Length: 255
Image (cartoon, rainbow, N blue to C red; front, side):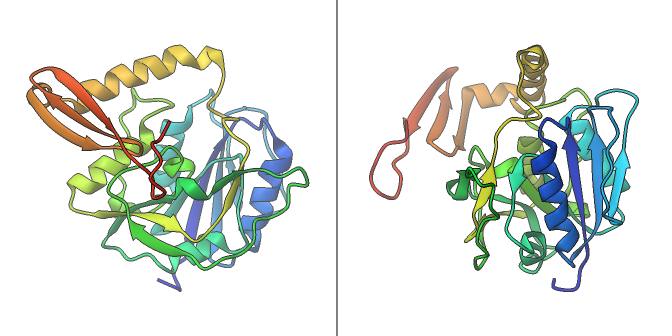
């Protein structure tokens, strides 16, 4: 939908302001993006010259999933993007993705094979032709960028703070009959785990995992269930779990 405007939501702990400023500069130059909502969980305050930028500094760290919920609720546009604060994207990336989207689609995430480490000179990735392909499962990097129409977003439960948020909205969208998509034909540079890393967050992540499983794994799933993941198929039969490793397109087993 070429003429639709986009709201971008970025939770941040400001662990690398240089990368964050590069990201906001890129978004500011994208004519399709007319609103950037920064959730400043560092509580430090943040300034940037962009007139598109709205900074929300909460009273305490909200963590990423509640920040996503707040950002989507605040967003004025129908198309919303949730972006990591530790990435460098190609020019007009968000507008190019939105141009391929339709309201019938569900969650649009990143193809993990096109995620690369940030180069030493922190250059911008080359601009390439973007395509969207059906995503029947999420890979490890799917949630680095997420785009959707607001009506396809399902609020993440308040008790899930830092992990499984992308899994929640992905699976809920699919259960609602939407066809989730994967962004192909574009490279993104990624620093990695600036906001979610840290040993102090491990107890929260463990609690998230328990609560997510409580919400999503029903008693009958333990009798029989089948799930396709990025690197293996998971089959549960009578309480036993079997994992079958996949092969990639070159015939190699995933590690």
